[in-house]
Length: 481
Image 1: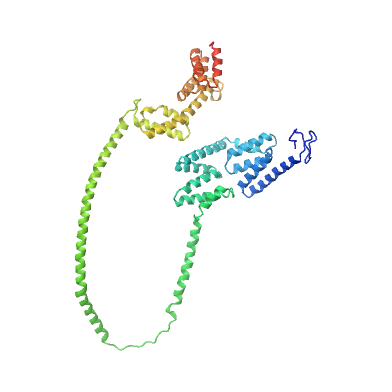
Image 2: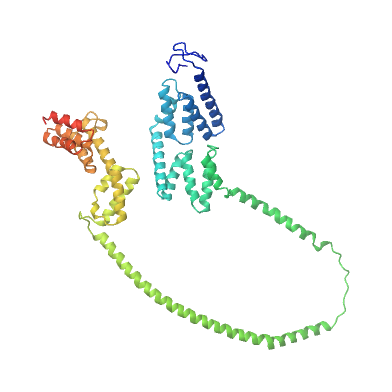
């Protein structure tokens, strides 16, 4: 160990520094406390209490920020929960404090050695931030789509899973709440004491897993079996059978039957038949009344249908006129309006796929003055705002490489290509002073000093706060300005 005052090497458990005389008893207590919290975090991490482990490791680092073991473990826990940026930050800090014999080297190289894996982690972070922004602005459907992609690429990303579960919980649909419960049950296995996950699970305590329904159904046959047992006990199979006795024939039953038939016919003729006839007459009157009502309703519906037909015909004509206008109308550049909207749609798709350069080029083919629809105008402005600046920066870098003969132009400077790319960069962002400066350099190298001077002076006069002002002044002095 080194003395905190003079950085001299001190033997283990020495209570004072032999070089400067510094009392080290309090310092040893602080180091011990840091190690105690580190050991506590190790135990918590083993039982998947990652939230508690993070709190213990932060406490350990408060006592001793040089405890690289605690910092490396904190990075591993962040990595386990999907927090890649936080994990890399901790490992980089650990590497700063202990440059040699540090496990952080292994962890950092594991991520950075595979460019595809590193790019995947970068995309996960961008998609999560995009989903978070969409959720804040009320676009839950887009947020859910992005979060599904994030959680499929990194199922252990706890914050993304929690946000997806929360969006499902905000829906009134029972299926979505069931999906939220399934997601939360999966991530609680990663961090068993995460307070946010536990709070969401408490909110979903009314949702029953499907296995409970199956268990209830499985018990139903037993219940029905118990209900049928008394019927078996009450059967007549054990009753005694009376001995057979032949009865003597009698005329009285036949007379009773005949008298009953005659009485029934009389009652039917004098009481039931008149009532049936009056009932039939009443039914006929009701049927006629219903028929009249239905006929009147049908006439009313016919009138309404005629009116609706006229309205629909007028709307169809208007729509046909609009279609003809879209197909045959021309914008300010003489282009077809339908083609303009198709180009705008193409640019929007490229923007969503994060291909900013192609999106910007597609927008360049469109005259914004020819877009009259407010929604289309908003889409144009949003895509242009996001893509033009990035496209300008990308084209500037390509033009600079062509000028310097670097990267894909290595060993062969291409001033013509550089000039084309840098002009295109300024077309997307006229305030790109970097592109302006290198365009001036290109003209200077191709023996066109006046054009070069024009761009240098523009930087100095119009952009006095630009870092390129000093470079432009230096080049003007070279030109004798």
